[in-house]
Length: 287
Image 1 (cartoon, rainbow, N blue to C red):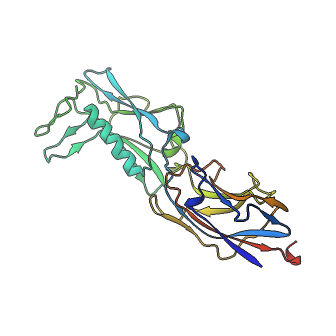
Image 2 (tube, helix red, strand yellow):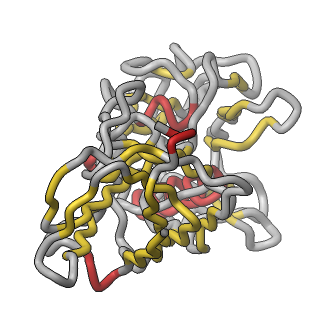
């Protein structure tokens, strides 16, 4: 004998972003020699990769100005959200526009002198910093009134803070890239360790009815791979159910919790998930 339980947004715990409580219809349910498995799950990919919860929102950009030694530093706090590397670079460009650190070429296109791009061949993030001209090139304009450096071959710098922003791009934290502004040409460098543009690589599903002694936390009943892009639905339909024994006892409710791969509570902005669970009696062969 088996029972199907559907846990969805109507079961979200008030004020929570990752916990659902299904209250048993009769006020409680008693389980003896029972086991539970997940049949399917649909979870909105709605959790940000840049947020205060991950402590990865800040960095700085430093630009050459006026003469051979003067600089201007822009401290940046990235608004919480989900950013691809391209979108992150676009946000940095918007900061440069707001602070006037860009030029416009003869074709009317903005020219930026520092960028983050994907190095597809190496699977890394590449930082490019270009020499800032001493004067506005012919046919170009300087709409931000950038006080261009009057001497020296100098490039902007990216400064990582002592936080987790470094992990997004794979650059050592609390470090300035390049270490000096004076360069003989374009400065390029790539990640010194594997970048993780999203801190969440997979999901864990926990349930209060089980005691999985091989996992921490011990409530984990399944790992769910992320098989789509942000804003879409993560779907999980296992080919074979993994059955876990339910601890014998009387329960007022079934509680499901979503975590990231490190067992941190998932900070979802859309909690409209659907989880199908099956509870059945254990046969003698499964005891």
